Length: 285
Image 1: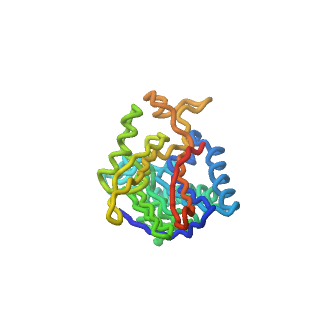
Image 2 (image 1 turned 90 degrees about the vertical axis):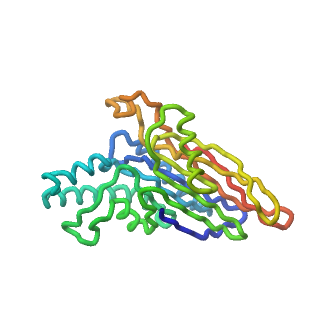
Image 3 (image 1 turned 45 degrees about the vertical axis):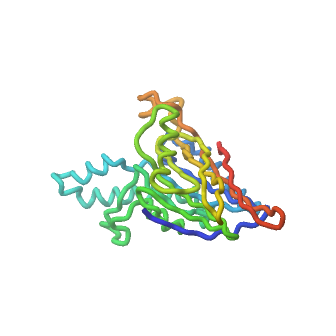
């Protein structure tokens, strides 16, 4: 688990949007590129208005190699792997995919809290360039964006807004499938069995939803009700694209993907001479 802490200067009258995103699959026909471009533009305009944002990537920014495909490449030539020329071609493909995606999100450089790897990523062989040997294309993207790499499994982010206010965020790409709405909710709620956080983020199954829950916390000699938010981070991949034959979503008759994402807004306000922080969520579509 990779842990990352960041201090945010939150001022009264300013909204700080925590913006999770993932399952973009930008290099595919199924990707709703117009919607993703609008998402980036919306956040950039929010910054221009004097507010701030923090993006958290939960994986699958491009439709790179799946786990089984990565395993098959390693098994090539009886376990000896691919020829150097093939490795160079794959390295070039991974770099070009990442560069294309970077150019889309570049307007928000400096506002990324970190990126997780998902199921679809590639690892550079470094045959032609040793400096990237063994790094994933998501790590390469983090270098270009100047943000932390949060790993493959789970990322832990702590945001310190001053005045004694903090938010703890547990982010995961996700796992498995879930056909029913209840099963998709339970996957998120069970994240609280691993670690105690304020905001839980999970992608992978293309669900978009938020569930609030309350838990008691012992603070300054008394109990307080503390809010927890469990978020399915949506998708920018159309499960039933018109005009072309759909992929696994259509083949398995899965529910349509939840396009867009769920944002968490954080605001500071003064009540009776004391500052209070509150956070809330909204669906972005």
